[in-house]
Length: 406
Figure (tube, rainbow, N blue to C red):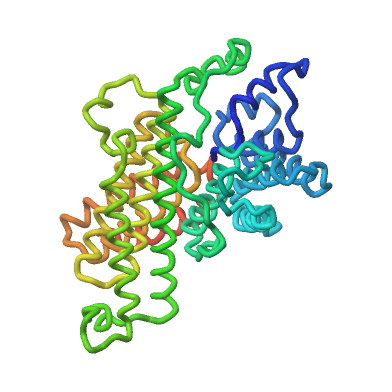
């Protein structure tokens, strides 16, 4: 989420005398809350928390109480905090990520943040930050909707912000004093890594346009009950009843294909020869792989909405790609940093693998069961980070045991 000016934030935190400016307490607590998902568990335990889930909820309540008490008067700061609070995926009070993104979108609409300002318009906030926050709303809404398999909340008619570019990101160094606050963080010292992450974020924003197309296709399929005969009917045939639906499928396919082929070199997987063997920052590797896990997850969702003969093989290929990427992250000791949308794509892959087991030959069945077992092991490693996924993992494991060959 590129929703803060990170140089300003780190400079302010590192200077205890306040010589580098101040940070809103609400925003600080929201940043701390979002970090509990990714920080090493040892640090949380040293701070007195018995589990990540306990720390996650404790830090959330700090941010929540500050927001609820209207501690912060600045609407942009409130919006930044709300977007960070969407990291709350598991909630007993109903206020999960979908709830918080809805609140954030309502505030952004009231602020007029989803409209590009005319050239020369007086800007009282940093325009780059405005654009990044607007697109963060859009991306978070898209990814949360993909995870929950529902329509996004932001309507296309309400969002008119031009696509992000690398120029919208603040790439630069921070003072040596501030660097001491994070001695092991290579990102703050490497301009190349900062540029790479900016490119990956732009590609993710572009992918979110495709996600919305696919979710709309899925919603139309679920609501109208499209038949196999209708899907097999060409759009120029006399039967026009489902022609719009077919067109939307083909447009979604084209959008995803165009997205993949237009990726800049750093965002491609596997990387181009220039990047292979380079001393790449782990954070760049992580985010590029997550980008492709999401892409393959979207492909799975699109072809689940179809009953073409080729749909099954395309889903299965995408599921294998997700399993392969997640396994690579595990081998590189980066799996613990996977965001929840990454865990969701592993779940999608598991479900497709499970369906494949039930229709495959004995030889192919054993290969697919191996893929499922790999996914289950990955999810077990993630159960501390994304505990809300545990129930689904257990259900899939139970289903696998029923259909496994004797």
